[in-house]
Length: 102
Image (cartoon, rainbow, N blue to C red; front, side):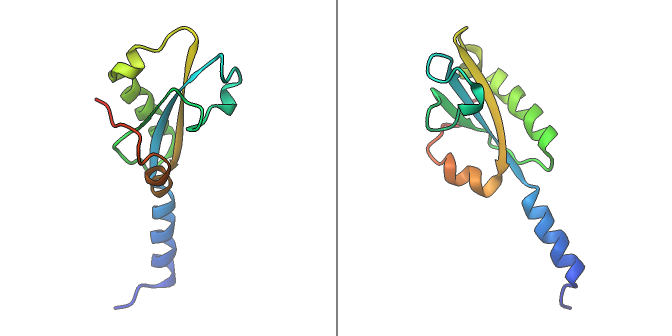
């Protein structure tokens, strides 16, 4: 039985809502404005190995994941962290080389 147009739309929407958290640690000396912190200028970048259905959950789990890692526990006073939630496909592309720490 072919899927109805509504089923296609829901499947597409579900795909869009799958998010992955990217955690960035940036130096205040290099990026004093945290909004300019990105993967290209981060000291550390970590991809959380989970997917989330909404941005709030993604952000909270990203922060909790960081707190459990050595990277998160060793953030100095001149470094800041940033959690960015992106569509999962984009996270796999942009963070292919990022370590997955625990």
